[in-house]
Length: 468
Image (cartoon, rainbow, N blue to C red; front, side, top):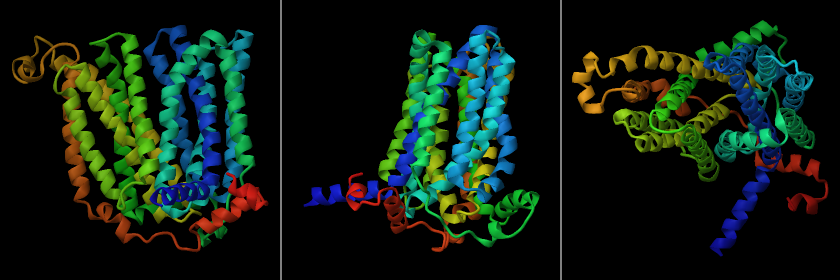
């Protein structure tokens, strides 16, 4: 009897999340295509130039336009139909990839063309990302939001694992032009999945229906967060984890290469991707804590401990295990943050709020890469050289030589993360944000019945609807 009840519960969850899963599968296919193409283009740039700086600019042109456009994109996403916004953004973002493919076939592709194409793509992704995230509350009942956000984190874990391996294989078989064609096909699949789905409609609030200028709507997002300091603090606290990710990313390659070959580095990077995938899968099955803020606090505290341990001794195993565990917590932080925002922000305003969140996080990641990278290379590595002042003090504990400066920097990052988390816990607006702010009203919340009605619109025949 208990097994039958568990099966019925699983089937009920699948049915209530049906619309979301249709969209999710399409977006997963598109993301694998875009990530694989990005990996192939990264290799092309590095092989063409041999410059780490130009290689880094590829990432910069992916993130900077996104951060700049997001505050403008958010209010427009709240004005427009989100499903149509995702479709149009997917199609337009693909144009930059098509241009790269044409230039490559003609033999005229240059590095600056890729910078320009990445900028073009990032602009439309600034519309796509908040539209997708804000649509989650339209596609799943409230009790499944944590599972849905866990699955969204799972998207990135899967793409990080698959893209390098798939890109390496496909480059030798179908070459860059074939990968680009595959990417275009993947985007078309994602668009078709969106066209098959009808998002449930909600009653918009006066904020959106009122006649106001775009400038007022842009500034409204900032005013909304300032009036709710708990939400603003939550976003900044969550963004700090992205800052740590950026710093660790830039340290990982040179630190690992002190111990092992490039092949081992690739394996370790894949392990970190597996950690992200596992964390997202855990959230999608588990559903998270009842109080999401406590999950965020706990994970950030663990992050500080893991980062500190990663730098204590010159051991590839210790570093890999510690950063694996650090990566495992990232989907939990991300998913829990999004659930709080989805519960506390009206769906009609979520587009601009998630756009601002995306802009903050898109800025935190490269800042982490730039600042931590510069500190490691210019400050900490010289401090821990064999003939440095610190060699006779702290060097006797953690070791000296190449890589130990980065180890010391990791230890300091861990200590600062623990202290920062402790200070954040003492901030009552953040700690009690789930208590002080009311959940979205029933007038705009999506129920399971709404999902069922939307599913029935896809399959008018009840027998077909139950077959899913």
